[in-house]
Length: 195
Image (cartoon, rainbow, N blue to C red):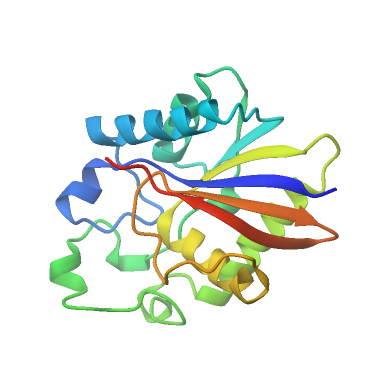
C-alpha cells in the first residue's frame, strides 16, 4: 500500500512581498502567510488527514508554517535536505535589480553566482524525501519546503505521475499529495489555498 507525502510550500513572507530573493536566507511569515497556513490546515482537517510525522526545511518560514498547519500537536523535525535553492550572491537582493525580466532559476543558471544547480537540488530533495518516506511508521507525512525546490522535485517526477502540474509552484501553501510506493513518487493531487 502506498504511503502518502504531503509536500507543502511555506506561507507568504516579508521578503515575498518586497520582491527580495530568499533562498537560504530567511524572513518571517506575513499576516497573509499565516492565514494561508491556516487555510492549508483547514483543508487537511476537513479531510480528516492526520500526520504520523512532520518535517520542514530548517528555515524559520517553513518551521512556522508547519507549526500553524499542525497546531503544534506533532513534533516537527527540521531537515536541511528540504531547504530552498541556494541563490549565492543574489540572495537578499531585489529580483528586479539582479534578475530583471523573465528568468529561469533552474538548470545551471545560479551556479555562476555561487548558487545551486537544479540537478543538485533535485538529487537532495529526492534523497531526503525517499529516506523520510522509507522510515518505519511513516504512512502519512507532512513536509514543508519552498517554491523553487518543490517545483524542481515535482518536475522530476512529473513524467511518471498521475497528475501534471504547471512549471511553477506559484502559490504559497500549495499542497502536493504524493504517493510513495516501491521507491517511486506519484503526484496524485494538488491544492492551492485561495488567499
